[in-house]
Each structure stands twice: as structure tokens, then as C-alpha cells.
Length: 263
Ligand code: IPD
Ligand code: CA
Ligand code: CA
Image (cartoon, rainbow, N blue to C red):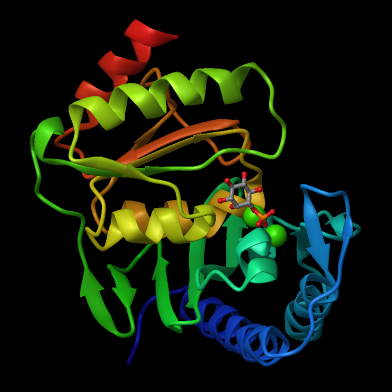
């Protein structure tokens, strides 16, 4: 018998994420049309994926609230449960057929992520966790790396569409961390970046100007895999903050020190 009180929610999230990822993979083989703006792209697939996920969740939990990237917040029942959905994270990659994009679904209870599912496509790796469980990738328990020196680390970051002051600061951080580590990757899906930290492919990830739907599932998966999470100055992080630092724990303070010197 499974005693995890969030298991039923996890199963629903996995079911919805699989349905959406099947649709996304099928759509990736057809012509992809974009709209929104020239740099912040949305496709019909983003919208279709969001509809599949929200229909599944609404049919099971009609009283729960929902925050989905393309349709916004629906909290007409003032529920303590909030589903947070990014129907396609890494849309720019998807449009260019760069093979790295994801579906991200999280359940928040009283402000804290309690369920997180990310499907990394086109590999179809299913990352998941609940607040009561380890983190998994395809049913195998995953853990962060044990690299304990920046000079031995591989990092990942991302850049928002808005080229604001944070974007300029991130360019400086990108250069500095490239100098003092074994490298910094920039893949284009924040949800995947969290999962790659959780499984130890990279030792740390930071980014500015993310939205709750980019972080809610990945942050829980990373946390349950042993990651340390904070703002870049070390302060406590919430999914509504606009900067995040996630590491294997060992290099966390060193990264904060670099940030404090450069900001
Ligand atoms: C984007 C991706 C990207 C990050 C951007 C996000 P989208 O999400 O997560 O990695 O750098 O800030 O907006 O628009 O592809 O869902
Ligand atoms: Ca996103
Ligand atoms: Ca998206």
C-alpha cells in the first residue's frame, strides 16, 4: 500500500503530462506556426497542450485552482490547491526543432510545491517527485552530483526574452562562471535545467526572470534529489521570486560569493 498522500495527484500529473507530450511529439513532425512576438514565441501546440492538461485536471479536481502560462490564473473556488502548468517549456527550441523541450506540471498546496512532473522531450524522460518521496527519472531514484569545487563543476543558466538589467548582469555572470568552472551550458528549457541539476548532469543552475510555471515542478524535483535552493544572494526562494539558484549544495556558497562580487 502506498502511504504517500500526494500519490493520486502525482498519478494525475503524470497522466496529463504524458498526454500532452504525446501531442507535442506528434506536432513536432508537422509544420510549426508561431505567434505572440518575434522573440517570445507561442505555437498552436502550446495552446493544445495546455488544453489537454487543464481538461484532465479540471475533470478530476473541478474545485482546484489553476495557473497555466497561456490562460492565466483561475481561482474561482479559492482552493488551497493550485496546479501550475507550463504546457511547453522551451518553445523556441521546439520551433527550431532543437531537441530539448518539456512539459511541466506542479501542484502547490498552501504555497509549497507538493507534486512535480517534468517530461523532457524528445527523449521522453519522466522526472517526478512529491514532497514525501525521493525524486525519480523513469522510476529510478535520482540524486544531485557530489562535485564540491567550482573549478570541477559544469553549470547551466538561461536568459529571459526581456533584455533588461538582469539580462546584462547575467551576461557578466555567464562570463565569470565560464572562466572559473568547466563550463556553462544554455539549453533553453528551465524545467529541464532543474531536472539536470537533480540528476547530476550539471552541478548548479541559476536564472533571472522566470515565472512560477517555469520553476514550480522542477524546484520540487531538484529539492527531493538533495539540491539546495535559494535566491542568488542566499535568501529564501519562493516560486514567485524572479531569481533562483539551485545547486548540489556543495558549491552553493561559492556561487553566492561570485554573485555578491559581481552584482
Ligand atoms: C522559457 C524557457 C527558457 C528560459 C525562459 C523561459 P518558454 O520558457 O524556460 O529556458 O530561459 O526565461 O521563458 O517560454 O519556452 O515556456
Ligand atoms: Ca517556460
Ligand atoms: Ca511555455
